[in-house]
Amino acid sequence: MKKLTKILAMLLTCAMLFSLAACGDTQSGPDNSSKPGTTAAPGGSENRPTPENPLVLKLGHMGNETNPLNTYTMRFKERVEERTNGAIQIEVYGDRVLGADRELLEAIQMGTLEMAVTTTSPLTNFVPAYLTLDLPYLLSDWDHCYAFFNSDIYTQMLTEGDSVGLTVLSLAGRGFRHVTTNNRPIRNLADINGLKLRVIESSVYVDTFTAFNANPQAMSFGEVFTALQQGTIDGHENSYLVIQEEKVYEVQNTISETAHMFAFFDMVISTNVLNSLPEDMREIIRTAALEAGLEETQAEQDTEDQVKEFLRGKGCTIVEDVAVDEFKGVVQPVYDKFGTEHDTNYLTAIQALDG
Figure 1 (tube, rainbow, N blue to C red):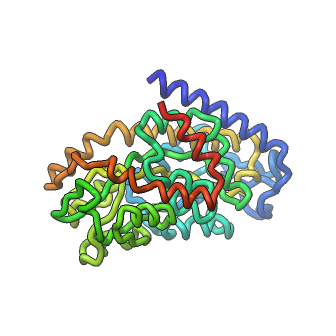
Figure 2 (cartoon, rainbow, N blue to C red; figure 1 turned 120 degrees about the vertical axis):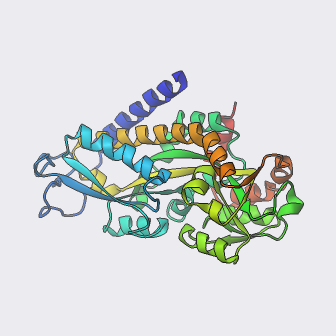
Figure 3 (spheres, helix red, strand yellow; figure 1 turned 60 degrees about the vertical axis):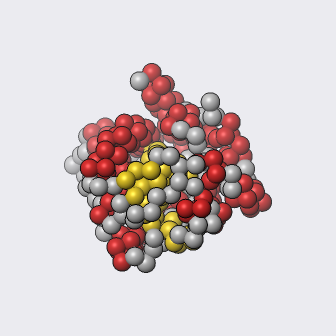
């Protein structure tokens, strides 16, 4: 609890710093003068959202009602609406109603959507700095994740999308990703050889599973269940809670704890929309997002053992005796390629936080 209190205090300080920095930003939002509840210019009082004349921000994500994408969203929504007395309202569209992750991010850039909660890997197509978080075995455990959230490097990374109109408000840790298959446990590299496995649409994921000598298939998660059901792919990889909430256990009965990546969600808002708000409302949004991300991270960690028991109850076999060192031993080429194509400052800083 002391650790979380310390992190939360840091995050609140970060929110204040973001707010102060934004005061000097002269970038204006889109012309919303005809729309109720929007501001005419950053920090201005004209057309300030009020409970009687609220600003409605549409937020899209891919999850169902109990999916962590939605619980992360609802933690944020409740805080914002309470702290603005309803002057800002978050209108949530889940279940891929507005599209998959990439479509949601594109919609924000085009100005047809205000916010989204996505996985960070699709975000890398727009903000390459987040590719660092896709690197295999980057984080060693949950404590390493909290150390990242308690660091200046996290604060800096959150600014990386501003230049492309995608302001990242916060991240939420999802835990390690593992491989699911049907009646095919994976205990070593030989067991994964040649398997056709769905991976996130990220070059680092593809490179990693190529290094494992698997046959990675990059595809949107919306296509995965059907592909698993029809047997067009042998398996996929994901975090425990997503395996549960998306009912992957109905079509896959074996989960092998390869722990190859530590996964994150992100909460993104249109930079123009955020900058069009008064300073105090920007601070409320940033703070609420940081708090929601930290709370969702803690919830994911706290429920992991319960989820494993739930999956066992559904007939799943969980393979815990995976020779992870074998997998770690073949991923150096992924790091080497990454280093030739991308800045490694975030990588070095995050690795230095371990222990």
